[in-house]
Image (cartoon, rainbow, N blue to C red; front, side, top):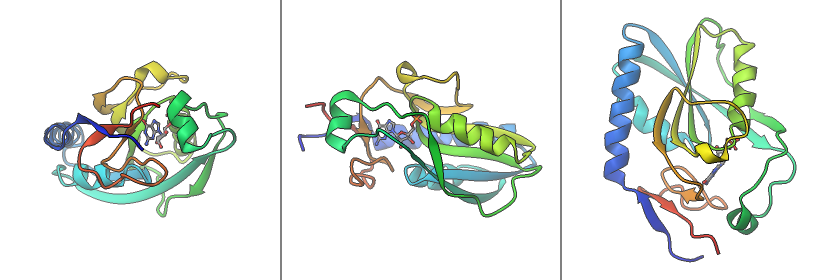
Length: 183
Ligand code: 5GP
């Protein structure tokens, strides 16, 4: 593995997460929200965002994985990867979403396939509102017409790790968001 390059510093993340927290607090003032984290990448973002909310909030988690042709991590780095679009649920929520204000908390919005799948699944459960908070967004990679409601940073088409994001399960604990150079 070659050297990682810092793309977004921990200070920039802290500042932006506080701004997102303030925005969500304003939008849902006086209401209850469910923060629904997408495992595992969103765990750190959810933990930090939650503490910036001045709201009555509960947590839940959902797990997804993509079927099909996800290559090995090194191949993924070289050429990116194209999911078949088939997303599979690996862990469902623990509580009902009906009539709740649900904020899906995701690490990164890339092709949009995962969140399109999740949105469809969750809408069927009739939440009162359904919003998407994504720390990162790679708009140039999008395959589905989907936007986040609360987006931390728009980034170029690079493979990033840190602050919850992994490369073969490593680097999730880095405090900064770093680019893994393509070899
Ligand atoms: P999408 O379905 O939008 O293409 O993919 C979203 C998922 O792909 C993210 O939740 C994340 O797991 C993975 N992903 C996309 N881009 C990156 C990246 O740059 N770094 C890492 N570590 N994961 C990524």
